[in-house]
Image 1 (spheres, helix red, strand yellow):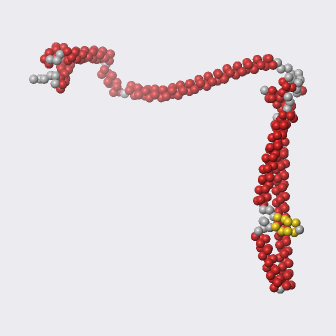
Image 2 (cartoon, helix red, strand yellow; image 1 turned 60 degrees about the vertical axis):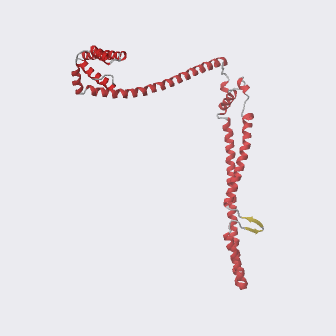
Image 3 (cartoon, rainbow, N blue to C red; image 1 turned 30 degrees about the vertical axis):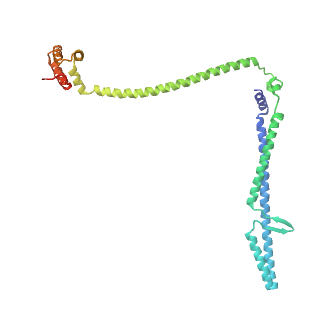
Length: 308
């Protein structure tokens, strides 16, 4: 915290951060270095062009001397002239690596080698600059652009507009605690609202699906209600309550008679007694006669009752 306070005081005093000054210095040195490497490359290229020009001029002079010798010496001159032309052709074919001794040895270096060499030199200089300026950055931040945090914390180092500024550390700490508590409560409230929003979104999606299903049911019910055939069937069932009670009573009677038949079948194994008790318990109406007929057929299939 004290380092941050010291850095903020120095930043306010300078008007910029300390690291920005160091970056500007490093950038300026790098720019000078790039200009130097570019100047070296330009010089070497110009030197190459100059040497190539000298080589061309000297080879031209050698050819002219051979022609004069041809005129003065006859056949021997012809031989010398042909030799000069051969050397000139060799110079044209291998223009990039010619070495000519004119007092001092001069070598023509190809342009791509010059470019490659300056690129390697630039890389070497960059690594050297980076390595040394890392040390410079650490030294400057620790020893030059730095103020002891004790001087700032105890109030010995102040800016001019901070001289009459009084800061109560106790009230600041209590205020910080209150703010931390408020921040914690706000975070909890935000998390609660996020979870609540998720639940609401889930309920909304479920409600939308349910609404679609209810719309389908509503269409089905409306189609049933608006169907005229259903109205006719409804009129046939009127009065509906009386018919329902009638059906319920008839079903109860039917269940009771079925239970009595089950008891008779379980208690008696004699066919005659079975038929007599079965006839006594059944009432003489159309429904009972129908049940009798079906029961006889069932007993015949099971082999319990025989007409003979």
